[in-house]
Image 1 (tube, rainbow, N blue to C red):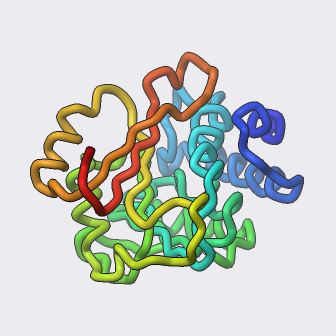
Image 2: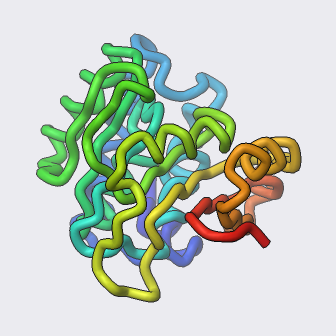
Image 3: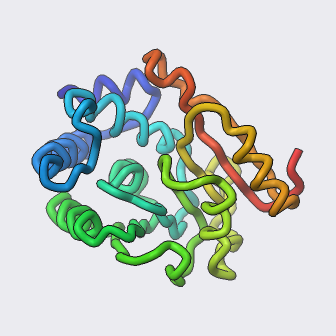
Length: 220
């Protein structure tokens, strides 16, 4: 399980210590999977390539220092845990309505020594803590994710002043044809700006996998 080589090929910077944490996280996911169904059983042999590396593509871009990042429907900690490891400049919260998964992510974070990661059990629309950024991986339609993101007045607050960092807003991993999702989002929230790009991975498995960002502003 050479995570460092996979991340190098994906253009994701990673220290030896971070690679060790990611390997330990992968081992925890596999250990708990039979009981908690954290990933599909058909993906067990591909936990690094299809899950960790996929999520790590978001770590190519930093978060502003002090960003408050919420992962909606974190499940087994994707993309929450890889980002907390690779981008420690932010503070992360994993939100999920399934208590056993929240407890599992909390335990894994504790085992990994991730002081910048907390969890919250409950429905996303009831989560009231401040956030500057939202992340998600195949959790809900864009319109719903944006409503969750805007659930707190601080959601659009500015953190830092780094033009190279993720702007405040929603960053999510999606796949397939998103035209209907984007149309529904922009119909309800015509002021938003939506950007869609490839995850930039050479494996054909990721041919239709995308990174979508939603930020306040006029959609173009």
